[in-house]
Length: 279
Length: 263
Image 1 (spheres, rainbow over the protein chains, first blue to last red):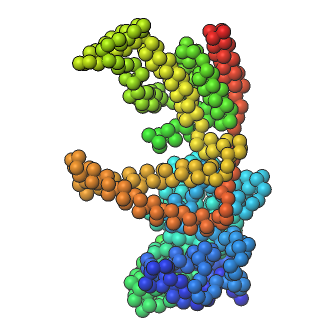
Image 2: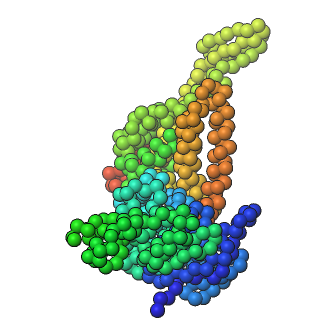
Image 3: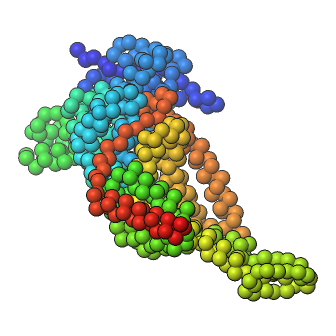
């Protein structure tokens, strides 16, 4: 049986002064231990959803549940939620606050009022895990965008959250930086953290995710295993979402050839090429 | 300039020395030069310049530009110190006049006293300024903040300064981007257009700043901000016996010299 870490039940939210609601009755459940991709056009409510997940915004209607328990407005509970749900914003400048890398990593821990020695120990361990020990005393503004993204991620992971939310973490990164970032995510996921990543890159989502959400106009449109979600071409076409390249290639392969290839959909063009070569 | 200063402070050779000790040294020297005579002040200036350029390896050019920049303010005030103006009848009585110019019923003149006063001020400024630059160039800002926190400056002040420091650079970067975009579209041609474009830049920058403020607020909330703002640094500092000995000996020597001159 799959358990859900986080659930949204008919959540509505309209920004003050906005005509359209940002969330228009979204109902969505994040399965524990998965790598989830959250797809949708700009303005479909992804970022607003994340801000609800972290307890920063409160639903105007509906409920957000953490492990089946509705999130109350009690401060201690909200603070606990912020520890359990780590949120990495698209723009790292938005969440890097302190002057140096080590100080920034300590920020969330200081908000938990942990003893100083414990904070230092956790910061040291996280710096090491992310391979950024030599940056400890570097001022944040001396780093590149890719480095800032990794520091922002480290600043969230130092809190050891159970659920990690990433808002378009690979935008503006070069392939090399993206690869390093994804490797970091693999390590985090392997350690037992559930991940939800908002992205526009369908090829990446298909290759990386094992669960996919599609949102549009503040609602959930599709959810499920990538194979099943991407099989709904009609709905995706309405949202102007092109299927992943590997799927298009796969479908162009004649049936009798497909039978001779190994079973199951290939996830990347590279994997497909590999299978074709082994024929 | 700010960016360069900051980069130097993080890369200088004295970086690993305890910021508290460096501050203490600069403060002690500052007190000595403020209370002493020009020869001692000049000696202190030369000595601290050796620390800045020699030990900390701050490029000579940067240090000189810094000095000239600050002293240009002093130069702007020089005429007021040097030149005295009086009516033609009975001017300059009892003073050693070096030069004088007459305009109708008024005379402008320079006295040896005036020159001496200006020279004293110059020596004092130069020495005090170099002490200040020693801190600026060798103590990274984040470490300066840690010292301020340790000596008990109110948290609200250190928090504000820290956020300001962090966002000065975000702000400068945004401004640079906006300016580049304006130039790319043919802005800043001629004085009039340059003024207008600068005005637009400031307006846009203000809008961006407000947006940034809202974003950062969300970012802080997401990281569990409650009411106080606290961070812990990891930086480990080393003690250098050699530098400590020189600092102490130098200060004692200067103080003794001053006592000998003054006494």
